[in-house]
Length: 343
Image 1 (cartoon, rainbow, N blue to C red):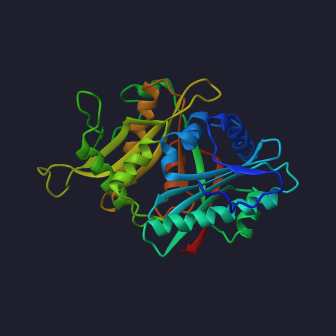
Image 2 (tube, rainbow, N blue to C red):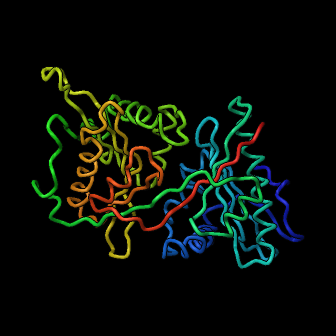
Image 3 (cartoon, rainbow, N blue to C red):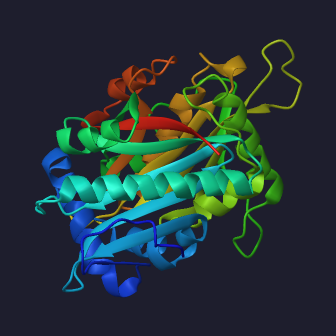
């Protein structure tokens, strides 16, 4: 990896991180999160996947080591989709020159983003970075590098009760709506047609949402499978009957992709909603609600204690109100900061 353009103090080095750096990388990320999330706990498996596992395949990354070899910053760029590069920075904020280090990392990230866009044959790309709401330090670094605050996201969670696994405890889907998991073969592998249907439904559902980007089916599946929490039996489809023609076969109108969360303070795992979308033609039919309850019941049956999700604070569908109605509460808020750059 090309590191010569990462400006560092005398005696410092820029290198590619490896699994030997895992503990330190988790410390950096946890320290930035704790004031806003209330916890410095980090999913070490996810960090390991970013550094050397399948999530590393779409990432360029570099760490800055001081004269003693201690990692003081970690910068990554993720080739997320055509025209969109996700930028991440974790900097030791105790350093007197933390601002200078952050600026150097963001400049490096911009150059990597341009190279990735050029490889895709694009003339420009969006750089997409994040911050916790209220994190003035991260906001200042991003603003100084030309990023602007584009959107806020509510990080919500709902407790799960064991009895919610029982039939009749949670509301049934509305008449005409049927929810099921993605079909699998005898060996547990998913049926390709169902996966393609999930992708098609979600692409359609998010067309009118903020910052929606077209993503190929292959990129979609590979990206989600790279997450350590990925499980094929956490993918769901919702089918809706034609009210004008009851004899017609129900049509797929909703999809949900979930994952497993690592054990929390209770010692129990949780479930997470990665994607939830309903076709615009089916909105108001209770499709999203039916999918949510299916995941809650599934989490209860697995002995999990919570279901988490992220929702656009300004969603045009009013999704946050739906989630609050059924017991989800906001734990903290994150922000998207964007910058467009030309190749």
